[in-house]
Image 1: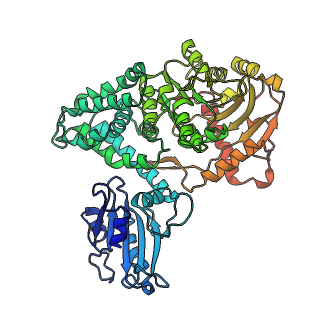
Image 2 (image 1 turned 90 degrees about the vertical axis):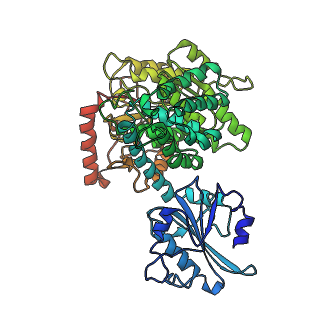
Image 3 (image 1 turned 180 degrees about the vertical axis):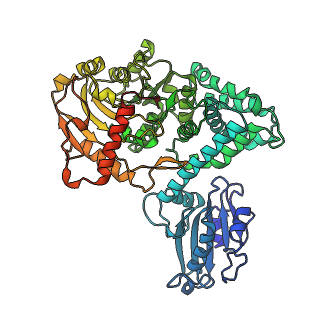
Length: 615
């Protein structure tokens, strides 16, 4: 076994992979195995091999070996001392409360051997077969990176990591608030800047050597270095990095304390390096900065709405990319980019349709355009794109109504100077707090006007935009076609109580010219549930099925009683499914009645007075 591990590179880099035989230097592993003796009489027990990767600290690989294939597995897997499978699962169950465990059983010799590969996600006690990302079972020993990749894409592992990350974001928020005394504006910038800095190998390896008063300057210089390496135009470098200077000069971060002799910034960097960065290297589609920012807003105290924004939930940004059916050939614009959630989801969806590296590079470099007015949010959006490899050069800081920016978007060109006007628009506009504020539909109209004729615009807005008479509805219909409106779950932006709907338009074709029915979907239940400290989550893993059913119905314009309907509408009509849909009374339940009453109550209380602007 040792020879096979060596052949597959397990011993090539001791900093990247640690192979230990019948022992462990990791205290948490030693503690977990302290009563894992296979005799059942207590006492410590160790498998033949314990393999860890410091950069993926939540996964441990264990291997148990037997010399004869007849000792591979017992009928009931209840003889850990005699059989390889029984033994490795015995150890795995001791480790799984704290780790995701890849358990490998090996029996036989070079001439004849048997392998079994199992996965115990953290918190689980029942093993499952280890399956590669493409769906095939793992049947032979593969390099460590491939083992980790296979485990990482398991749904239970993914959900547990999401849960851990959300809980950690609460811990980080409390640390920044109580120890570092940072404002709500500073917290997400500290996270984003640190993750950018940790992408620099020199910083990641040497930050701990800097004294407290010198680390902030090193941190800031590293951010500038990484931004410049990303080939962002010089004026944009200044716009992006300027908000981070407030973190650099924050007095509480640069002085040593009794509890943190290397300073609080050092502790922030260490926490993110240990707890977040490993996940980003595996889940390239995981909106880490946006997720952290959203959680910080949920956990804030007195000035929790300091930036006046509410982030679009990740499953909604992904839903937008599916509604628009974005591909590698599209060009996407978000005129109110926020932290870049819509652009990230679009980029990930587009990348799945790319077949060559040049196509993927074109997506990241040329086909994503964002506009964000607020400096802090612009910095976060650019950071988010940098952490994913590209796309940030097409971010504009300023108003989406600025004539120069609008002109630049309409005349957008790729790196070869070919015209690439956007054909897909995704937006969650600022939500009006009073009648004097600009209507959400003005932002939607502005986005649609940027798109080429025949392009698709998707927006999520307060339901009052769809139900009330307005000049904006008439203006939009005079130039664009209302394709669809989907009524969204009333608590999709929990804890902010604003009832929303998604609107879908075809740009550049007046509604009267299109002269067709619009499709209305009743998408009120996404199967998410509220859990204390976690917010709304897909606890029972039902969202993928719900999402796919919704998308299939939308793409095919299916009409189902109680779920969807088509209707001819004009600017003075209500643009919601509830106004036209016939109820299928045969399937009504108590839950349906409760949901309708809740919808109505929330609509009366919040629907006409949305609280905050979004994304």
